[in-house]
Image (cartoon, rainbow, N blue to C red; front, side, top):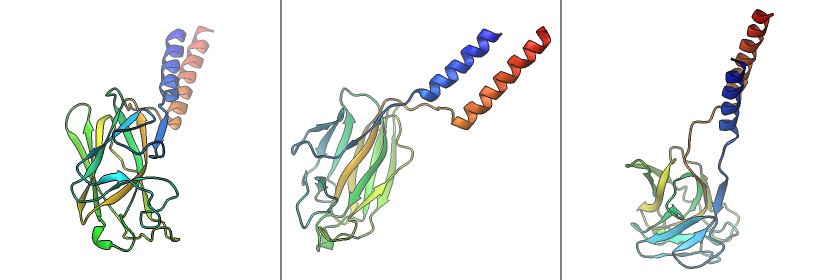
Length: 202
């Protein structure tokens, strides 16, 4: 019984300790598609997709980014070698300073699930963009539900183009990992069972 309790505890702690390392795709190491960084590949989907960073007109966050220049265009992200991954976050901004007609207001992200099917969500921009000025041009999003993907696409649904940067991804399948509080309760329960068994044996 004691050995079984120890084994169960070890498995639970192992699950808690197992986690993949998240990486940021920041588009700073190349200027052509297909673009590879941190074990992921980014391909252009449609026309008018280029590397940005054009001061002062492009959305300014201090680094190079990718701009998608028209409705219907976009980019696709996948893991090198075809593995599964999760999408944890990304930054999006409007397109060119002073030309609101070129700005998209609605970005659609589509995740293609490893078991088949898709997970789709829309993200809305705030219309704040002054290029190299003092405003924060890029908005940070942390979506939920984009787990165990084979690929993910970013595309404009309305109005025009947008800028994409700092895509936060983590390779590997996502499993349900016990929360620290749950593990603490499990440990206390196992310790109680072991203590009761010792008292009975005495």
